[in-house]
Image: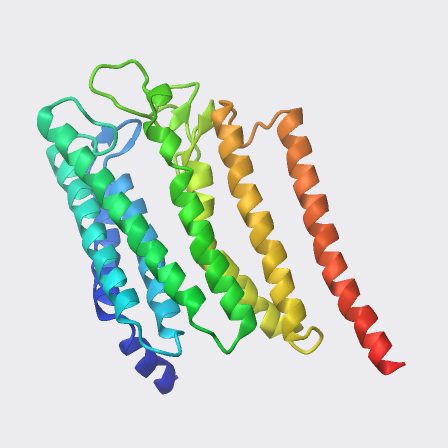
Length: 309
């Protein structure tokens, strides 16, 4: 336990300071949700800072952990991590600042200041995307001793980039709701701020582009967790190569799911009300993933039997 804490204390310092600040902001935002009765786009005004701060806690902690896995220190990756912190600070400063002003941060062009702040957020995200890509390249270029971890980290970083990219339709001209001063939307087929799922607020009456964005972004945590679980529960039954192949299968399925959810949203379809076409696509994804995973395990068994013969 002491060794683990010592290692964590030496993780990328700017990222961990940012994570600590976001954890505090999450608590402040949670209090704001309860204490501040203001509502914006159909939800408590402090809900957006809460969701973004929690997301940055997860994102920053995972990135810092991934950087700690590198066998050799990379100044480029460390600088990229610091750039991500700076862009995260810009993003959260605008979000919290707009909440304090009682207005929205996203898609807001109602005044020159609001439009400039939204453009600033967009520029910050583009820089963050580039810095994240740099970290992904560095991680893939450095050999990790654990093959399963290497694939999990590499796929997690790559699919997180996909999660960022699937948010682009939110700001395309086709998403403009025809309301003066509004330059985009989360929802498809319905106005933002309508009925939504608890906490996340995803639309229950139309499509919602935040779903694929959310799923893709959290590949950064999901695939390393899968790798850890494979090692913990199947480490004695499956060799490292087989576990790595299962992670690859899971990564492919995760990417397909991200695209499927985005496709469903672009068709104006609520997450919990899929039509026959969406259900068929989900079924095909589940069956193909199960078949691929089964083939990987079966190959391992055949090889084991051949060696024993």
